[in-house]
Length: 287
Image (cartoon, rainbow, N blue to C red):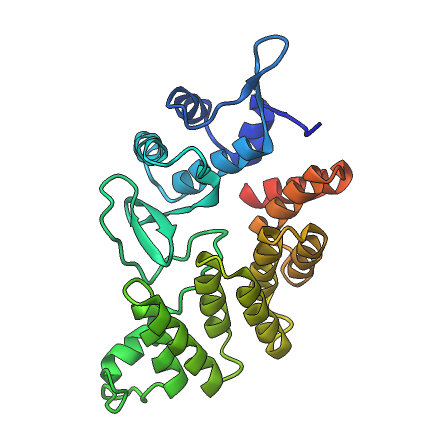
């Protein structure tokens, strides 16, 4: 039987206030079990769900808005689609849902655009603002650059073009990412973004091949190992996913999300000692 967690341990683990947890429960967003003394007992799914709220709180979203946005979102989802299957993050002052290469406001459903913030724990790695600024100044064809700024390389132009196309034309975005990687096989952001695009489209085997290709060029890139672990986990290849999370952590011991996901998988497979070790590391990193 999977381990259940007390309210105290969940609060310590995630850094959420008792008020926020209570409001999430009252809104029906989380439904923990009751223990023999009527105390709350949280499953791993509950913990993952509450962790989303923690991330939004850390992004300075007010607790009232967290509860309202996530409760509103959950009310519009079919029962067979658990909220933990979506990626949710803060974009400015909004609560954003990332689905199928598009991000939209959880309450208004309006599309949101943001090139600065990559959601914590997500499979997506956005390219840096400086690169996009250079590309914008260079012009759409990349022929002209602003005074004092050299024109960006063609691979960087392909990368920015691909990112801009994701929401409107995923197929064209995929082609542009592949072109960028073809021009520069060591373009790590190309592998990360292309893999994420394929991952979100449910093309998990293809995403895995992209991450493997990226690791052949840069085996020391922890984000590639992490994203590869996500794909393996969704393919139900848990042992390989754990190995990939551990590879990520050997390169970046402070990768909090890798600790969290590894802990969750170890717990599911009955290895409580390793689950505790990774959860402890995750908690230390959240302080």
